[in-house]
Image 1 (cartoon, rainbow, N blue to C red):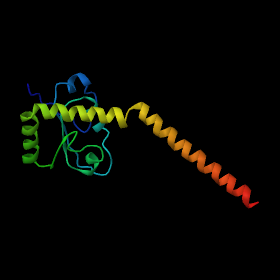
Image 2 (image 1 turned 90 degrees about the horizontal axis):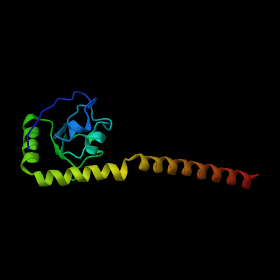
Image 3 (image 1 turned 120 degrees about the vertical axis):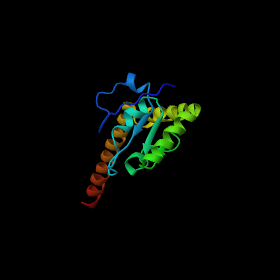
Image 4 (image 1 turned 45 degrees about the vertical axis):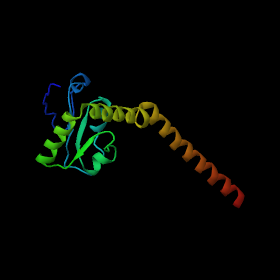
Length: 136
């Protein structure tokens, strides 16, 4: 597998899926407080993913769909060697990551979650109205 190194900066920005299709993706962050939006296009790319083991990454990623490593040069180097040394496992984890996006974070799934939230709100409001009318 030819290895190409691209530094994408703070976010994936204009990196296209065509470029991502040839890469091992490395996600690193020092901000552990929010889910990094870069995780979603990385998983969607279907490429092996190596990420630092911080809360904002482990909200979505686990060892089934990525390699999680400590944020040290040695750990990152070991992770890269692991990905390159296990191409079949890399393909399996990448496929599971892509399946996770399709199953839990697709536009269809997002619409289902929003609809469920609105249904819950409407049902709770109806219950409160019924309870208020009984008390009168």
